[in-house]
Image: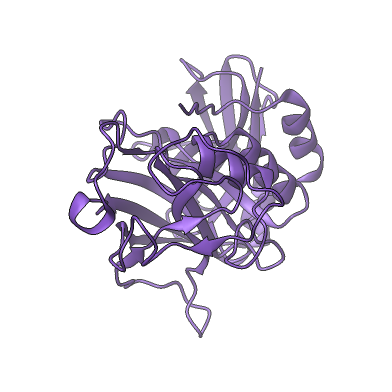
Length: 313
């Protein structure tokens, strides 16, 4: 049985506030990811009665960090996702990469409408904001139940060879992998740990799977978000910060704002204003937003965009 939480320890949030700068370099883009399960009995053996996927989780990052790779040992976070579908430790590893300046934001798909997300189900992650600083996408989901099998992508670049955002991306076939952390040949979670730990390997063509993919990943380019300028960056203020009730955004630039998006730390869009933005000060009611760290993406009418941190008490 897996659990999913979007709450991180206060210590990590405090460190992120102190040491992390979330910037979108020269430009950023918005993508939507759609995962479609193709896990079926004809290609992958008789499925268990409770076949499902754990929530699709991951992050955007740069080439200084790798979260999983064939031929390498699985980290504790990858092990937990692969064995029990629990992403808590993986998010702590992502937090550490964010703290080191090597990752953007964590990504979490909440399985809305699929509980559990059945073998042939579809799930969608919207509003993934990717910057030039962190153009690589890593995602993982557990094939559940199983010893330690998963599907995912590792360090997929959303920039092309000319450092332009990819706007047309063919569907990506998703194949099964073995995390190398638990023994077992069938769809069961009741197995002994692999000792010593083995390397991550492909299970394509290995019982119970054949060479057919277990899913497809469709990455859809939605829009180019920003060409950031220093003057715009320095002209936007959020106050108070930390905030308890009303959030005020002051615009001292010569540009009119046309959109404000607030994301939680795992990349979910939780509030937006995209019409009737006028004046030098915009007030936003906190409403039902919980305590924690948020990212506020502020866009101007001429395409400039910045992202600032916001803490709600």
